[in-house]
Length: 168
Image (cartoon, rainbow, N blue to C red):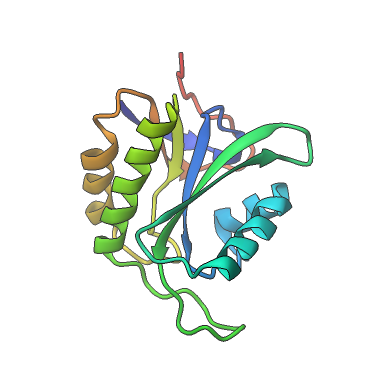
């Protein structure tokens, strides 16, 4: 069941937050920055993982950890885009629908394999990724719509506002 909600995804009660990043993302803007501030160990773990093996677009990197406030959270980083280069100052490039398609398929498999009961995600790959929501939304419906769990798409960001998620 896919529901579009308005609110602050950081306040979501969903079991997992999924969001798009680049392969060597600096986690310095938008939701990635907010997650880095709340879960600094996630970014350290991601950096370690990228040094162990180069990530590819279309893949996911799942993490579970404890926030500074003591809450536990699952986060699935969806590699929706690459980088301009491997240089330290390189920026993410525009996302490709092909990679979004692959990453959503991987997310659906992860949700099924791990028995995840609910997922929250923003309007994937439409910010830094620069894709049109009208192109991405059908892919979310295609890959996540049949999971039989609440899939909450945070359609409108409202800082500090708890969305009406109706998780159960």
